Amino acid sequence: MQSTTYFFGAIALAFSLGACTQNNTTPESNATGGGTVATPEAAPETPASPPTLQFTALEWEASPVSLEIQDQVGQTFEFSCPPGDPSQRIWGTGVYTSDSSICAAAVHAGLFAAETGGNLTLEILAGQDLYTGSQQNAVTSRDYGAWDGSFRFPEASDSAAATTPNIQWDSTPGSFGIAENVGDRYSFNCPPNGELGASVWGTDIYTNDSAICVAAVHAGEIDLATGGPITIEIAPGQDSYTGGDRNGVVTADYGSWGGSFIFLDE
Image (tube, rainbow, N blue to C red; front, side, top):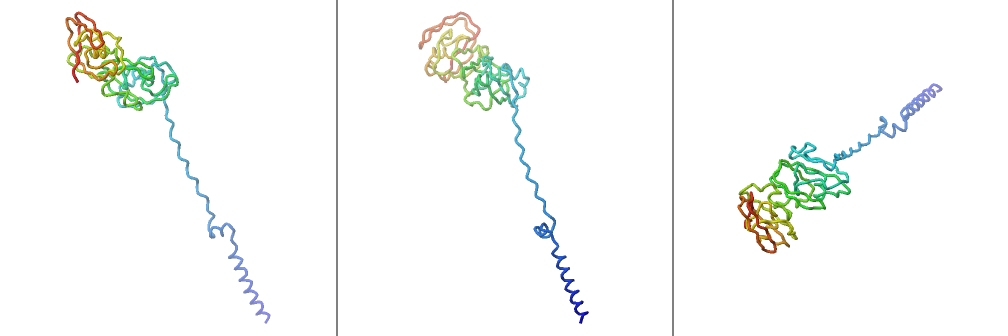
């Protein structure tokens, strides 16, 4: 009887030890289903900031020619102009000769004021046959004829480079360098509210140093108040030119001269 008691006691002790062994788990292993403790996932990387656009600072007299970039047709460049003097020389409107001041041209094109300066994008273009000057944003650009390199500002208004260029009321064939291109025809637009101060010699056929728009009023092609489009043809020089009083414009006589122009009906 006593041995039986010891036998059952041993069995009970064995069951007790087995239960303790099975329940000998840590809180961490219970929390993860009895497996290895999970490590937290790495935080996602923060996207890199886009690179800051770098603008090359310019002096106000700088031009594509002085920067030696005038031959890189189709390329664009980013520049920054400090506050400065817009009286630097420029030629053209919308499209400028490659020896024009970049910063002064940017003010002329309306990108920023000379007093503040600013950033700009410049595109190199091929040369043009003709560059027309104008007065815009308190900057006056000049006329010029053929030149082998140009530039423009892509963000400037497209109206600045109209198909028929606006010219100034004192522009002449000579100021564009086209005075000797006999037989060639050129179309221009004379802006409204013109001035008659520039000189003109001749009637119907005019000396090539006569103001085109003023001569156009004299010839009856346009009027002073509204201006308008005109087309001229470069003609040979004449032995004499006869002045006259027409449409409120008085032109002068002149003797022999090396080149002329006439107006063609639109």
